[in-house]
Image (cartoon, rainbow, N blue to C red):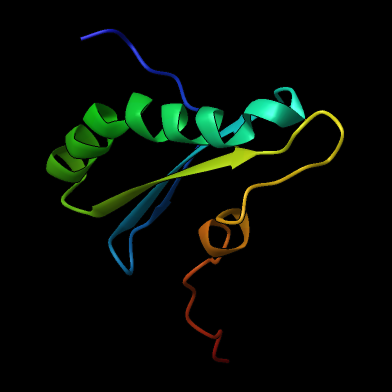
Length: 87
């Protein structure tokens, strides 16, 4: 397997969730295609992380066009699952 190096990997040990984040800034005309490619690119890594760390893993492509265009999925993908802090 070819090595994959995402921009960011966030591990929430308490909730057993891993989030693999990769950012791209392509031409506005290809943002949907780039988003799909990012998801496909990290599927093997996602599966490996799930097995190695016993977590549920997801891939979050953050694709913003060079002139600011975003895909319709960006808002849904950026939702972070967190627990409220208690004192």
